[in-house]
Image 1 (cartoon, rainbow, N blue to C red):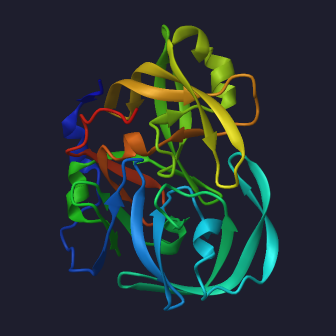
Image 2: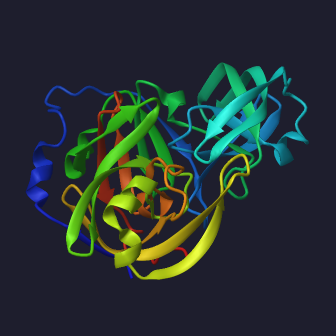
Length: 300
């Protein structure tokens, strides 16, 4: 059973910039569907022809489509084969140099597209926050909308403000995990494409000896976008902290026996969906506020 604790609400009052002279700015809204796999699915149109269901993937920096979907698409010209890396390894992938993608009021021209094997269930592929460069991204799970702002909305002052680490197109956040009698600080990739709550990197598993302190409740296999198979163990973590936010008894995953392969710890959709989220335009801060899903049981 998930439990949620928030400390020191008064700290929020200085979380956002002052808006004494705030002017009206344009914001665009994109509706999404939240699937049972904790993925955000958005409808788009490729090359003014092919309608696609794409997963908004916070750890993606390119548009990709899966092979099963591209078989029925006529508008894409595959120009070459490229080698693409993913969190599980590298694979050769077909590449299309220039395409148009339309999502809601947004249109992006000259977009490259890569082909791979997997995306979130029910989706044809995925895209990432790089399409909204230098813009504020708000994900409202209560209303099931993504709002793209020119500047931070004033209501972010009611959110918990946390530092965001932005490296090589990836967004990381620092969290603390209680393992046995110790608390370990680690950074986590914000990864809406991962349906689980938390997945630890191999170095953290080695350092914390997490497998010796937590009861293993299940073992599963994961496949990345290119079919690489990774075996993971699932346990219950008694306490996880993000700033002043504490989450109790949450499911976590980790690998054993493959040290060095899983190089990043991951904060996945089963945690992210419990907060309405605002990411600032320069990717230096993230703002979190509990929503109506905060006490929802985790997906088994």
